[in-house]
Image (tube, rainbow, N blue to C red; front, side, top):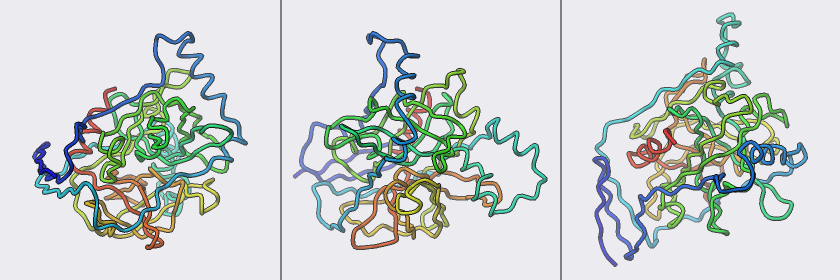
Length: 338
């Protein structure tokens, strides 16, 4: 067993592991469409979007890892992080601007959580088809990007460990604001998926993060222009009040967005995991849903600093999520221009 030292953007990673040819911070991507294919991009999008009937959407089942507490593992990672926080602000889309223009200015927290906060425009449900007649579901959120087409979700929502492939060609779509089958802002098809080797090769839950670039809609509109986007933060303080959103199957069968809130704490997972945990009764289906710090309950605005990743089988009613450090920020920066 060897000892290696990785230095990335001022953050020092001490890794004790068996030698491997795979660079844990290699960025890997998969594209949904190739110009060498016999059909046009438009035809490809028609096939993906028309695949999804109401029955298929409601038949989708969640994938969420349910882990055991572990103090041993092939990879041990200790992070010494002295980097200052980095952040990108969220944006207001044209659809929310129209609602704000009509608002009386007396928006309550109940209204924000129920349907008028920014998170109801930017957070949505993810779907894909598996082999046979089965379908998967997760959660995700639009993040600020110069390409105006980027969402964030969990790595395990994008990458299938059984097939060792990204789900990019499995009719992967995002539906913002999904509720009881309603699709008020339409369906959006995935164009590119990106994650770290640390997830796709090593299944390191510190990097259970995936960014998905979407196609524009049939009118050539970017999802960020319409829906707005959430801010992203890295190296934010730990042990802070945090709000988590998603579509858990154990509550309303994942048909309605739910949320949890509480002060984060160090996860008890072990195995070199540096993520945090939050009190939460959501389970599978909420995977990839955003965790917000500095969340303003009167507007639904905050900064995504983690996401729903996994539960621990011996600890009920708690959700675990990766800590967004400089490595996650670097991955984000690589994806927002694609």
